Length: 221
Ligand SMILES: Nc1nc2c(ncn2[C@@H]2O[C@H](COP(=O)(O)OP(=O)(O)OP(=O)(O)O)[C@@H](O)[C@H]2O)c(=O)[nH]1
Ligand SMILES: [Mg+2]
Image (cartoon, rainbow, N blue to C red; front, side, top):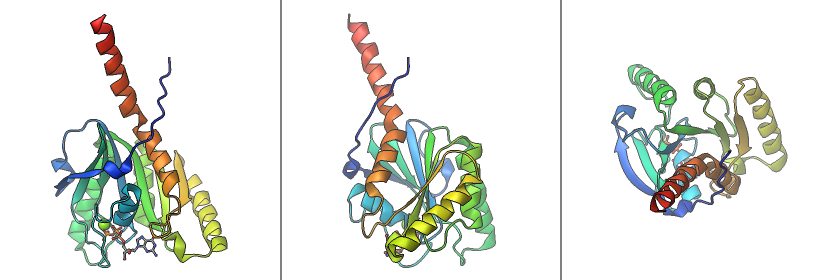
């Protein structure tokens, strides 16, 4: 029997749990984790704040590379969001970049509770090498990907649609479950759609809770 549970998560209840210097310092590999990743300055922190309707849950900045730590947030019981440090920041020394890329790859391949990856790209500069690498890692690990083309307010409607279609075409060549949509933290474009997607990815956490409750009920009888 297939168990489908539809949930509406209240993202405004999200709160900060911890910062980790690298993925080895993350808490237990359990529950459901969704990671947000993207180049420095892609608008990751802004998207988390918009998703949760909190002005300063994640720190935003005009200086790229500001978020160097991995930040873990709790959305609901057994549901976490991880804000990964931005990559591709020119002023980070090469050695550090390589180390970070290696641990990012490891995280995507080994973190069993990772059930979805949100990749953010500035709609004006999408699909750089590292963005593609990240998506390929996720696809190879069977993890679904949601690409958000951020700062969509910077393009007029026609150019925006054309860019979404072109990135969708490119995403097709990578295989796997990769969805591409426009997003703007500033104007609220794509926010409800993102919430719906995360609801689906997080739903099994609630199915697990329900079946535990069923077990308890049958124990009581
Ligand atoms: N126009 C516009 N600007 C945005 C949007 N989202 C973010 N920005 C701006 O882009 C810059 C970077 O945003 P952040 O959310 O800090 O980006 P980040 O990916 O978290 O950056 P790092 O943590 O430094 O890697 C800030 O100046 C934001 O105000 C958007 O939807 N529209
Ligand atoms: Mg940030």
